[in-house]
Length: 154
Image 1 (cartoon, rainbow, N blue to C red):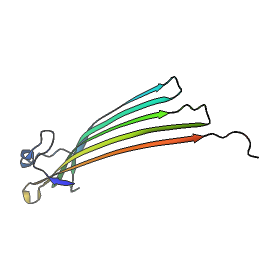
Image 2: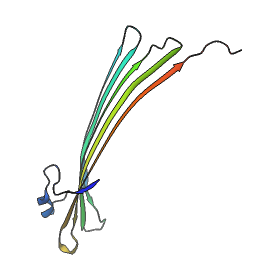
Image 3: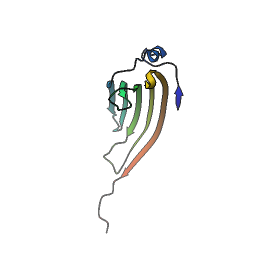
Image 4: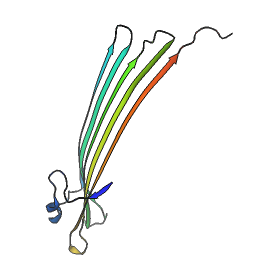
């Protein structure tokens, strides 16, 4: 979904556009990733496992969009991304002929992106701002079974 917006993130506004204040060329990125894994073996041989993760990044990017020796068209992009996931599993003992693992997995991703394009053709600065937003959610349940056969097949 693309939406024309009158505001830019991180303190940017239409005043930035009016002043021709686009970002210089180059990219600034900040990232963080975290995960936590918990595993517990029960007295009856079953194993419980929980994993939680989160990843985030934000960036600001400046681009000479016309690739000419003089900068007539410049583009600045600002973005943020956030991903969170959780998984819960239970596993049966593996010392018998039949074993299994079952669980659920949940995931959510959100991304915001704002773009500012400045056009300086005819010595006038024209400014266009766009905003794009994406979100996806996923959930799954699963089970896996293993049956072990031993002996001869005669």
